[in-house]
Image (cartoon, rainbow, N blue to C red):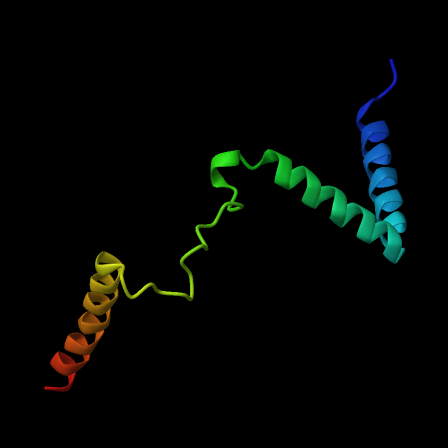
Length: 88
């Protein structure tokens, strides 16, 4: 019966050397990186993907939106009050 253990180690060393040899060439590295990014994006569930950001109100506050303006003013006052407490 043939000893299988050295055969497996030779195969692993051969696969490792082949992969190092292939990845030493820059276009092959770029192909591998794009492939891994594609696979990674497909594996992330849809609920964790951040594609639909609510940007319709960003950077353009409406003066008639009272609730939004109150929220902004409360947030601004929180940091001012915190700073004043620290300084006194």
